[in-house]
Image 1 (tube, rainbow, N blue to C red):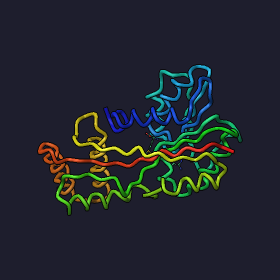
Image 2: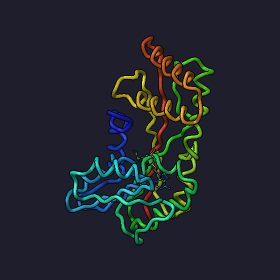
Image 3: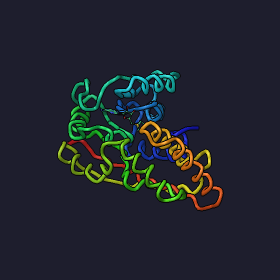
Length: 245
Ligand SMILES: C[S@@+](CC[C@H](N)C(=O)[O-])C[C@H]1O[C@@H](n2cnc3c(N)ncnc32)[C@H](O)[C@@H]1O
């Protein structure tokens, strides 16, 4: 169990595969593949006649992804950035990216590159998060606000889903749709995204210099709120899909 193996991560990957209308034998790119979770699901979907490429600029992420997918032979991993892809034009039937674009400074160049490597009629499906609406509820407000404020530094674009339809249209996509994948966790059990996300947020805040005592106190207050039945966590991912014209 971890940040991607909880029920919300599994559900999101299922919705994305359905939105891509994946077929056996297709050639698909997962840009910013991280630990390879979506790559694995896509490789199982396209089968031995198909192929999935996972691209990510982080060698550590790619090492984890290679290990996670080591039993499948229709996958390749490449170390590269979405702003400058090495693939030829029209290489892929579909491209996907999960929570990646909001971490890239030049989103337009990345979408332009995605369009270039995608064949005409191919689909691009991406999720990104309305980070201003991601919120833990339960800890004392001043402390809670403090850690949320520090966490804003973890990504460049806080509200990217609002801009994506226009950016896709400007870069050669049509049939663009957005769908909310928002969810609420009301407990911190082991299969809830909130539990794993609270750990990630605490680690990030510590790395940004928030005092360890404050971070530990925030985590303690989350647990208290959970025990006392007043815990909540809200997240607002958005699925954006377009077809290459
Ligand atoms: C929040 S993680 C998501 C990982 C994976 N897609 C998932 O859902 O588990 C963001 C990923 O974007 C990658 N990334 C950052 N900058 C990138 C860029 N310029 N091009 C492609 N990927 C990038 C990071 O290395 C990281 O693996």
